[in-house]
Image (cartoon, rainbow, N blue to C red; front, side, top):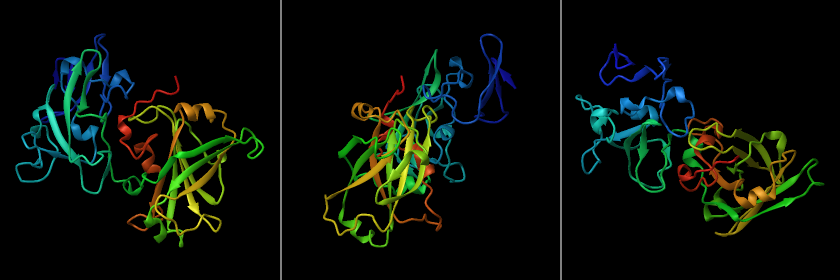
Length: 328
Protein backbone atom coordinates (compact mmCIF):
# COMPACT_ATOMS: atom_id res chain seq x y z
CA UNK A 1 0.00 0.00 0.00
CA UNK A 2 1.05 3.63 -0.42
CA UNK A 3 0.95 6.23 2.30
CA UNK A 4 2.28 9.78 1.93
CA UNK A 5 4.55 8.74 -0.93
CA UNK A 6 5.95 5.70 0.89
CA UNK A 7 5.72 2.08 -0.16
CA UNK A 8 5.48 -0.60 2.52
CA UNK A 9 5.50 -4.34 2.66
CA UNK A 10 2.09 -5.28 4.03
CA UNK A 11 3.08 -6.36 7.53
CA UNK A 12 3.21 -4.99 11.05
CA UNK A 13 6.22 -2.70 11.60
CA UNK A 14 7.08 -3.22 7.92
CA UNK A 15 10.20 -1.60 6.57
CA UNK A 16 10.05 1.19 4.03
CA UNK A 17 11.18 -0.12 0.64
CA UNK A 18 10.84 3.04 -1.49
CA UNK A 19 9.52 6.58 -1.43
CA UNK A 20 8.86 9.48 -3.80
CA UNK A 21 11.33 12.32 -3.52
CA UNK A 22 10.54 16.05 -3.80
CA UNK A 23 10.95 15.85 -7.59
CA UNK A 24 8.49 12.99 -7.92
CA UNK A 25 11.13 10.33 -8.50
CA UNK A 26 10.60 6.90 -6.96
CA UNK A 27 13.58 6.10 -4.74
CA UNK A 28 14.19 2.46 -3.81
CA UNK A 29 15.88 1.89 -0.47
CA UNK A 30 18.49 -0.83 -0.39
CA UNK A 31 18.23 -3.61 2.21
CA UNK A 32 20.17 -3.19 5.41
CA UNK A 33 20.63 -0.03 7.44
CA UNK A 34 20.15 2.84 4.97
CA UNK A 35 20.78 5.76 7.29
CA UNK A 36 24.12 5.21 9.04
CA UNK A 37 24.90 8.86 8.41
CA UNK A 38 27.47 10.12 7.53
CA UNK A 39 29.13 6.81 6.65
CA UNK A 40 26.58 6.05 3.94
CA UNK A 41 27.20 8.59 1.19
CA UNK A 42 24.44 7.45 -1.21
CA UNK A 43 21.57 10.00 -1.12
CA UNK A 44 19.19 7.47 -2.68
CA UNK A 45 19.26 5.36 0.48
CA UNK A 46 18.23 7.98 3.01
CA UNK A 47 14.85 7.61 4.59
CA UNK A 48 12.97 10.90 4.10
CA UNK A 49 13.05 13.24 7.05
CA UNK A 50 9.28 13.38 7.34
CA UNK A 51 9.12 9.64 7.94
CA UNK A 52 10.76 10.33 11.34
CA UNK A 53 11.48 6.67 11.96
CA UNK A 54 14.79 4.84 12.17
CA UNK A 55 15.48 1.56 10.33
CA UNK A 56 14.98 -1.75 12.18
CA UNK A 57 17.82 -1.85 14.67
CA UNK A 58 18.80 -5.45 13.93
CA UNK A 59 19.41 -4.48 10.28
CA UNK A 60 21.78 -1.75 11.40
CA UNK A 61 23.45 -3.92 14.05
CA UNK A 62 23.50 -7.62 13.09
CA UNK A 63 24.05 -10.24 15.83
CA UNK A 64 22.45 -7.94 18.38
CA UNK A 65 20.75 -9.19 21.54
CA UNK A 66 18.13 -6.61 22.50
CA UNK A 67 17.01 -5.68 26.00
CA UNK A 68 13.68 -4.10 26.97
CA UNK A 69 13.55 -0.33 27.21
CA UNK A 70 12.58 -0.09 30.87
CA UNK A 71 14.89 0.22 33.88
CA UNK A 72 17.26 -1.39 34.68
CA UNK A 73 17.38 -2.29 30.95
CA UNK A 74 18.75 -5.77 31.67
CA UNK A 75 15.77 -7.98 30.75
CA UNK A 76 15.96 -9.66 27.33
CA UNK A 77 13.46 -8.70 24.67
CA UNK A 78 11.03 -11.58 24.08
CA UNK A 79 7.94 -12.23 22.01
CA UNK A 80 4.59 -13.49 23.32
CA UNK A 81 5.89 -17.08 23.33
CA UNK A 82 8.97 -16.20 25.36
CA UNK A 83 11.43 -16.37 22.46
CA UNK A 84 14.32 -13.92 22.46
CA UNK A 85 13.86 -11.43 19.61
CA UNK A 86 14.67 -7.95 18.39
CA UNK A 87 11.55 -5.82 18.14
CA UNK A 88 10.40 -2.19 18.11
CA UNK A 89 8.09 -3.17 20.97
CA UNK A 90 11.13 -3.39 23.25
CA UNK A 91 12.27 0.18 22.55
CA UNK A 92 10.75 3.10 24.42
CA UNK A 93 8.56 4.30 21.50
CA UNK A 94 9.11 1.73 18.76
CA UNK A 95 11.62 2.89 16.11
CA UNK A 96 10.23 6.44 16.08
CA UNK A 97 12.23 9.62 16.52
CA UNK A 98 13.50 10.11 20.12
CA UNK A 99 12.98 6.43 20.92
CA UNK A 100 15.65 4.62 22.95
CA UNK A 101 16.71 1.01 22.39
CA UNK A 102 19.07 -1.11 24.49
CA UNK A 103 21.18 -4.16 23.74
CA UNK A 104 24.49 -5.99 23.57
CA UNK A 105 26.23 -8.53 21.36
CA UNK A 106 24.83 -12.04 21.24
CA UNK A 107 26.92 -14.73 22.88
CA UNK A 108 29.74 -15.91 20.64
CA UNK A 109 30.25 -12.52 19.01
CA UNK A 110 33.17 -10.15 19.45
CA UNK A 111 32.35 -6.52 20.08
CA UNK A 112 33.92 -3.10 20.42
CA UNK A 113 32.23 -2.55 23.78
CA UNK A 114 35.48 -2.12 25.73
CA UNK A 115 33.94 -4.08 28.63
CA UNK A 116 30.65 -2.16 28.69
CA UNK A 117 27.77 -4.45 29.65
CA UNK A 118 25.24 -2.92 27.26
CA UNK A 119 24.75 -0.10 24.80
CA UNK A 120 21.84 2.27 24.16
CA UNK A 121 20.75 4.09 21.02
CA UNK A 122 18.50 7.06 20.36
CA UNK A 123 16.64 7.56 17.10
CA UNK A 124 17.58 11.00 15.78
CA UNK A 125 16.26 12.83 12.73
CA UNK A 126 17.15 15.96 10.80
CA UNK A 127 15.74 17.51 7.66
CA UNK A 128 19.03 17.19 5.78
CA UNK A 129 20.08 13.73 6.91
CA UNK A 130 16.90 11.74 7.49
CA UNK A 131 16.77 9.47 10.56
CA UNK A 132 19.52 7.35 12.04
CA UNK A 133 20.49 5.59 15.26
CA UNK A 134 22.84 7.50 17.57
CA UNK A 135 24.78 5.36 20.01
CA UNK A 136 24.81 6.91 23.48
CA UNK A 137 27.77 7.51 25.80
CA UNK A 138 31.30 8.77 25.44
CA UNK A 139 33.81 7.35 22.96
CA UNK A 140 31.25 5.36 20.99
CA UNK A 141 30.27 6.25 17.47
CA UNK A 142 29.09 2.82 16.42
CA UNK A 143 28.83 -0.82 17.38
CA UNK A 144 29.98 -4.05 15.77
CA UNK A 145 29.00 -7.56 16.83
CA UNK A 146 30.85 -10.18 14.80
CA UNK A 147 31.20 -13.98 14.98
CA UNK A 148 34.64 -13.69 13.32
CA UNK A 149 37.04 -15.95 15.26
CA UNK A 150 40.06 -13.72 14.62
CA UNK A 151 38.21 -10.63 15.85
CA UNK A 152 37.28 -12.48 19.03
CA UNK A 153 40.71 -13.91 19.77
CA UNK A 154 43.25 -11.32 18.58
CA UNK A 155 45.06 -9.74 21.51
CA UNK A 156 46.15 -6.17 20.79
CA UNK A 157 47.63 -5.45 24.22
CA UNK A 158 50.95 -6.89 23.00
CA UNK A 159 51.50 -3.90 20.73
CA UNK A 160 54.76 -2.09 21.22
CA UNK A 161 54.23 0.79 18.82
CA UNK A 162 55.83 3.20 21.28
CA UNK A 163 59.09 1.30 20.77
CA UNK A 164 58.64 1.06 17.01
CA UNK A 165 60.85 2.76 14.50
CA UNK A 166 60.64 3.66 10.84
CA UNK A 167 63.59 3.81 8.46
CA UNK A 168 64.02 4.64 4.79
CA UNK A 169 66.20 1.87 3.43
CA UNK A 170 66.03 2.27 -0.34
CA UNK A 171 68.95 -0.09 -1.13
CA UNK A 172 67.52 -2.83 1.07
CA UNK A 173 64.22 -3.41 -0.65
CA UNK A 174 64.50 -2.35 -4.26
CA UNK A 175 62.29 0.52 -5.40
CA UNK A 176 61.27 2.88 -2.58
CA UNK A 177 62.07 0.33 0.09
CA UNK A 178 61.30 1.01 3.74
CA UNK A 179 61.71 -1.01 6.91
CA UNK A 180 59.15 -0.87 9.69
CA UNK A 181 60.25 -2.16 13.09
CA UNK A 182 57.29 -2.87 15.36
CA UNK A 183 57.61 -4.14 18.92
CA UNK A 184 55.98 -7.29 20.32
CA UNK A 185 55.71 -6.76 24.08
CA UNK A 186 55.81 -10.19 25.69
CA UNK A 187 53.63 -11.75 28.33
CA UNK A 188 54.44 -14.86 30.35
CA UNK A 189 51.86 -16.82 28.35
CA UNK A 190 53.97 -16.36 25.21
CA UNK A 191 56.36 -18.96 26.58
CA UNK A 192 53.69 -21.65 26.28
CA UNK A 193 53.32 -21.23 22.55
CA UNK A 194 56.56 -20.24 20.84
CA UNK A 195 58.27 -23.67 20.76
CA UNK A 196 55.70 -25.29 18.48
CA UNK A 197 54.98 -22.13 16.49
CA UNK A 198 51.46 -22.07 17.87
CA UNK A 199 50.78 -18.38 17.24
CA UNK A 200 50.33 -15.74 14.57
CA UNK A 201 51.45 -12.10 14.57
CA UNK A 202 49.16 -9.55 12.92
CA UNK A 203 50.47 -6.12 12.02
CA UNK A 204 47.56 -3.71 11.54
CA UNK A 205 48.27 -0.70 9.33
CA UNK A 206 45.79 2.10 8.76
CA UNK A 207 46.15 4.63 6.00
CA UNK A 208 47.61 2.24 3.40
CA UNK A 209 46.27 -0.46 1.10
CA UNK A 210 48.98 -3.07 0.51
CA UNK A 211 49.13 -6.48 -1.14
CA UNK A 212 51.66 -9.31 -0.91
CA UNK A 213 53.87 -7.75 -3.60
CA UNK A 214 54.51 -4.79 -1.26
CA UNK A 215 55.51 -6.78 1.82
CA UNK A 216 58.41 -8.90 3.05
CA UNK A 217 59.51 -9.90 6.53
CA UNK A 218 62.66 -10.93 8.32
CA UNK A 219 62.52 -13.97 10.63
CA UNK A 220 58.85 -14.66 9.82
CA UNK A 221 56.85 -15.98 6.89
CA UNK A 222 54.32 -13.58 5.38
CA UNK A 223 51.28 -15.80 5.63
CA UNK A 224 48.70 -13.35 4.31
CA UNK A 225 48.19 -9.70 3.38
CA UNK A 226 44.58 -8.50 3.33
CA UNK A 227 43.43 -4.95 2.78
CA UNK A 228 40.55 -2.64 1.92
CA UNK A 229 40.63 0.74 0.27
CA UNK A 230 39.77 4.21 1.48
CA UNK A 231 36.05 4.59 2.16
CA UNK A 232 35.22 0.90 1.62
CA UNK A 233 34.12 0.35 5.21
CA UNK A 234 31.00 1.95 6.67
CA UNK A 235 32.56 2.33 10.14
CA UNK A 236 35.56 4.45 9.15
CA UNK A 237 37.02 6.10 6.09
CA UNK A 238 40.72 5.21 6.00
CA UNK A 239 42.37 2.40 4.06
CA UNK A 240 43.38 -0.62 6.10
CA UNK A 241 45.85 -3.53 5.81
CA UNK A 242 46.54 -6.64 7.90
CA UNK A 243 49.92 -8.34 7.53
CA UNK A 244 49.71 -11.85 9.02
CA UNK A 245 53.03 -13.40 10.01
CA UNK A 246 53.78 -17.04 10.87
CA UNK A 247 56.91 -18.09 12.80
CA UNK A 248 59.60 -20.17 11.11
CA UNK A 249 62.96 -21.66 12.11
CA UNK A 250 64.54 -18.19 12.15
CA UNK A 251 61.91 -16.56 14.37
CA UNK A 252 62.90 -15.20 17.79
CA UNK A 253 62.76 -17.81 20.50
CA UNK A 254 61.93 -17.61 24.18
CA UNK A 255 61.70 -17.91 27.00
CA UNK A 256 60.88 -14.25 27.51
CA UNK A 257 60.19 -12.23 30.61
CA UNK A 258 57.00 -10.20 30.88
CA UNK A 259 57.51 -6.78 29.33
CA UNK A 260 60.45 -7.82 27.16
CA UNK A 261 60.17 -6.50 23.60
CA UNK A 262 60.94 -8.39 20.38
CA UNK A 263 61.41 -6.22 17.30
CA UNK A 264 59.53 -7.47 14.23
CA UNK A 265 60.99 -6.18 10.98
CA UNK A 266 58.69 -5.78 7.99
CA UNK A 267 59.78 -4.41 4.64
CA UNK A 268 57.46 -2.24 2.55
CA UNK A 269 58.46 -1.73 -1.09
CA UNK A 270 57.06 -0.11 -4.22
CA UNK A 271 54.54 1.92 -2.25
CA UNK A 272 55.28 5.64 -2.53
CA UNK A 273 52.64 6.70 0.01
CA UNK A 274 54.41 4.90 2.86
CA UNK A 275 56.57 7.71 4.22
CA UNK A 276 58.06 8.67 7.57
CA UNK A 277 56.13 11.94 7.57
CA UNK A 278 52.81 10.11 7.28
CA UNK A 279 53.79 7.73 10.08
CA UNK A 280 54.82 10.65 12.32
CA UNK A 281 51.62 12.59 11.59
CA UNK A 282 49.39 9.61 12.33
CA UNK A 283 48.03 9.36 8.82
CA UNK A 284 49.65 5.93 8.74
CA UNK A 285 49.35 4.16 12.09
CA UNK A 286 50.04 0.61 13.16
CA UNK A 287 49.63 -1.89 15.99
CA UNK A 288 50.86 -5.40 16.73
CA UNK A 289 48.32 -8.14 17.45
CA UNK A 290 48.86 -11.69 18.66
CA UNK A 291 46.67 -14.77 18.44
CA UNK A 292 47.49 -18.14 19.99
CA UNK A 293 46.74 -21.14 17.81
CA UNK A 294 46.54 -21.57 14.05
CA UNK A 295 42.98 -22.88 13.58
CA UNK A 296 39.47 -21.83 14.57
CA UNK A 297 36.97 -23.80 16.64
CA UNK A 298 36.11 -25.95 13.62
CA UNK A 299 39.72 -26.86 12.89
CA UNK A 300 40.01 -24.59 9.86
CA UNK A 301 42.87 -22.16 9.25
CA UNK A 302 42.03 -18.87 10.95
CA UNK A 303 40.26 -16.41 8.65
CA UNK A 304 41.85 -13.02 9.27
CA UNK A 305 40.09 -11.23 6.44
CA UNK A 306 36.77 -11.28 8.30
CA UNK A 307 38.39 -9.27 11.10
CA UNK A 308 39.74 -6.57 8.82
CA UNK A 309 36.61 -4.41 8.79
CA UNK A 310 36.36 -4.37 12.60
CA UNK A 311 39.71 -2.90 13.57
CA UNK A 312 41.38 0.41 12.82
CA UNK A 313 44.49 2.36 13.72
CA UNK A 314 44.29 1.43 17.40
CA UNK A 315 42.59 -1.97 17.48
CA UNK A 316 43.13 -2.40 21.21
CA UNK A 317 40.93 0.63 21.83
CA UNK A 318 37.42 1.30 20.65
CA UNK A 319 38.01 1.68 16.93
CA UNK A 320 34.57 3.16 16.31
CA UNK A 321 35.44 6.29 18.30
CA UNK A 322 38.12 7.29 15.79
CA UNK A 323 37.27 9.75 13.03
CA UNK A 324 39.90 9.77 10.31
CA UNK A 325 39.40 11.64 7.05
CA UNK A 326 42.55 10.78 5.11
CA UNK A 327 43.09 11.36 2.29
CA UNK A 328 41.87 14.94 2.11
